[in-house]
Length: 126
Image (cartoon, rainbow, N blue to C red; front, side, top):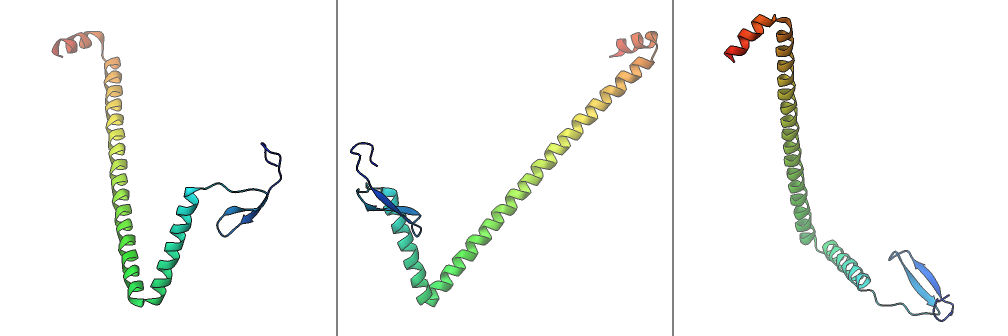
Protein backbone atom coordinates (compact mmCIF):
# COMPACT_ATOMS: atom_id res chain seq x y z
CA UNK A 1 0.00 0.00 0.00
CA UNK A 2 1.05 3.54 -0.70
CA UNK A 3 1.65 5.66 2.39
CA UNK A 4 0.03 8.72 0.85
CA UNK A 5 -3.05 7.52 -1.07
CA UNK A 6 -3.49 4.00 0.40
CA UNK A 7 -3.82 2.42 -3.04
CA UNK A 8 -2.41 -1.06 -3.60
CA UNK A 9 0.38 -1.84 -6.02
CA UNK A 10 2.37 -4.95 -6.89
CA UNK A 11 5.89 -5.63 -8.09
CA UNK A 12 7.44 -8.51 -10.00
CA UNK A 13 11.07 -9.52 -9.65
CA UNK A 14 13.25 -9.16 -12.72
CA UNK A 15 16.24 -11.52 -12.21
CA UNK A 16 17.70 -10.70 -15.63
CA UNK A 17 18.32 -7.07 -14.63
CA UNK A 18 18.52 -7.71 -10.86
CA UNK A 19 15.62 -5.36 -10.31
CA UNK A 20 11.85 -5.15 -9.83
CA UNK A 21 9.17 -4.30 -12.39
CA UNK A 22 5.86 -2.64 -11.62
CA UNK A 23 3.02 -5.08 -12.23
CA UNK A 24 -0.05 -3.01 -11.34
CA UNK A 25 -1.25 -0.03 -9.36
CA UNK A 26 1.64 2.38 -9.72
CA UNK A 27 4.22 4.11 -11.82
CA UNK A 28 7.95 3.73 -11.44
CA UNK A 29 10.03 6.88 -11.13
CA UNK A 30 12.94 7.54 -13.49
CA UNK A 31 16.33 6.23 -12.40
CA UNK A 32 19.35 7.43 -14.39
CA UNK A 33 21.66 4.71 -13.07
CA UNK A 34 19.35 2.03 -14.43
CA UNK A 35 19.50 3.48 -17.95
CA UNK A 36 23.28 3.76 -17.75
CA UNK A 37 23.61 0.13 -16.64
CA UNK A 38 21.28 -1.08 -19.37
CA UNK A 39 23.19 0.86 -22.04
CA UNK A 40 26.50 -0.47 -20.76
CA UNK A 41 25.21 -4.04 -20.87
CA UNK A 42 23.78 -3.51 -24.37
CA UNK A 43 27.09 -2.10 -25.63
CA UNK A 44 28.99 -4.99 -24.05
CA UNK A 45 26.70 -7.55 -25.68
CA UNK A 46 27.00 -5.81 -29.05
CA UNK A 47 30.80 -5.83 -28.79
CA UNK A 48 30.77 -9.52 -27.96
CA UNK A 49 28.50 -10.29 -30.92
CA UNK A 50 30.77 -8.31 -33.26
CA UNK A 51 33.83 -10.05 -31.89
CA UNK A 52 32.21 -13.44 -32.40
CA UNK A 53 31.43 -12.60 -36.03
CA UNK A 54 34.76 -10.96 -36.86
CA UNK A 55 37.69 -13.24 -36.12
CA UNK A 56 40.28 -10.52 -36.68
CA UNK A 57 38.67 -8.28 -34.06
CA UNK A 58 38.49 -11.26 -31.71
CA UNK A 59 42.23 -11.82 -32.10
CA UNK A 60 42.91 -8.12 -31.50
CA UNK A 61 40.77 -8.17 -28.37
CA UNK A 62 42.56 -11.27 -27.11
CA UNK A 63 45.95 -9.63 -27.63
CA UNK A 64 44.74 -6.51 -25.79
CA UNK A 65 43.50 -8.69 -22.92
CA UNK A 66 46.81 -10.58 -22.78
CA UNK A 67 48.78 -7.30 -22.73
CA UNK A 68 46.58 -5.95 -19.93
CA UNK A 69 47.02 -9.16 -17.95
CA UNK A 70 50.79 -9.07 -18.39
CA UNK A 71 50.87 -5.44 -17.25
CA UNK A 72 48.84 -6.35 -14.17
CA UNK A 73 51.24 -9.21 -13.39
CA UNK A 74 54.23 -6.87 -13.74
CA UNK A 75 52.57 -4.35 -11.44
CA UNK A 76 51.81 -7.09 -8.92
CA UNK A 77 55.42 -8.28 -9.06
CA UNK A 78 56.74 -4.77 -8.47
CA UNK A 79 54.37 -4.32 -5.53
CA UNK A 80 55.53 -7.64 -4.06
CA UNK A 81 59.18 -6.62 -4.52
CA UNK A 82 58.52 -3.28 -2.85
CA UNK A 83 56.73 -4.97 0.04
CA UNK A 84 59.62 -7.41 0.42
CA UNK A 85 62.10 -4.53 0.57
CA UNK A 86 59.97 -2.72 3.11
CA UNK A 87 59.75 -5.88 5.21
CA UNK A 88 63.52 -6.33 5.13
CA UNK A 89 64.00 -2.69 6.08
CA UNK A 90 61.72 -3.13 9.07
CA UNK A 91 63.62 -6.28 10.01
CA UNK A 92 67.00 -4.52 9.85
CA UNK A 93 65.68 -1.64 11.94
CA UNK A 94 64.45 -4.10 14.55
CA UNK A 95 67.83 -5.86 14.52
CA UNK A 96 69.67 -2.54 14.95
CA UNK A 97 67.45 -1.57 17.87
CA UNK A 98 67.92 -4.99 19.42
CA UNK A 99 71.73 -4.64 19.07
CA UNK A 100 71.69 -1.20 20.71
CA UNK A 101 69.51 -2.47 23.54
CA UNK A 102 71.81 -5.46 24.15
CA UNK A 103 74.89 -3.21 24.06
CA UNK A 104 73.36 -0.94 26.69
CA UNK A 105 72.50 -3.96 28.83
CA UNK A 106 76.11 -5.21 28.58
CA UNK A 107 77.45 -1.76 29.59
CA UNK A 108 75.11 -1.66 32.56
CA UNK A 109 76.14 -5.17 33.61
CA UNK A 110 79.87 -4.33 33.28
CA UNK A 111 79.45 -1.14 35.29
CA UNK A 112 77.59 -3.03 37.98
CA UNK A 113 80.54 -5.43 38.29
CA UNK A 114 83.25 -2.73 38.55
CA UNK A 115 84.24 -1.33 41.94
CA UNK A 116 83.28 2.27 42.71
CA UNK A 117 86.89 3.53 42.44
CA UNK A 118 87.16 2.19 38.90
CA UNK A 119 83.77 3.77 38.03
CA UNK A 120 84.97 7.20 39.22
CA UNK A 121 88.14 6.84 37.16
CA UNK A 122 86.11 5.80 34.08
CA UNK A 123 83.72 8.73 34.42
CA UNK A 124 86.71 11.14 34.26
CA UNK A 125 87.68 9.78 30.83
CA UNK A 126 84.20 10.01 29.30
